[in-house]
Amino acid sequence: MMQLPETVPLWLGIPVVVLLLLGSMITLIGALGLYRLPNFYQRIHGPAITITFGAGCFLIASMLYFTGLEQRPVVHELLITAFVFLTAPVSAMLIMRAAVYRDLRNEKCNPTTGQESTENLKDAKGS
Image 1 (spheres, rainbow, N blue to C red):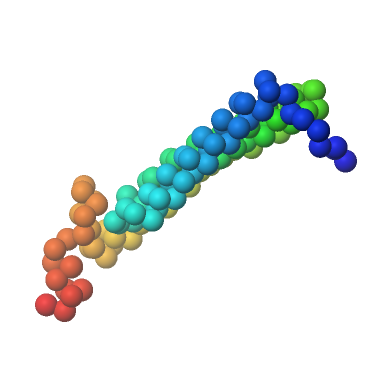
Image 2: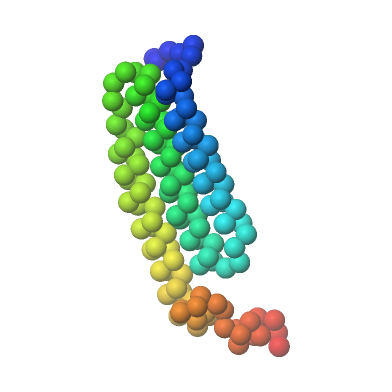
């Protein structure tokens, strides 16, 4: 079991704090994009990009912190970061592609603009 240090050296604490704050702000921006954007295609794009980089900042901060405390290279987080950077955009793209095919099959939206067609909006309102 690892003991927590009484103090963290300044050369280690500053980059870790900066990366944690940067990762938190990036992840918050992605979450706000998920909440505020109007349609599915815009909603999924923001978090797919920003949360990937936010998780990368968290993992690099963790790598720096534990490398400094244990005084040996800790590279587990590099493997996790590579896995997240490779899989998160691909999974977001596959989700978006499935939504496009679903909407095209239902003829719900224009694939070039991502906007719902006006005929379907009138049908949905009962006109």
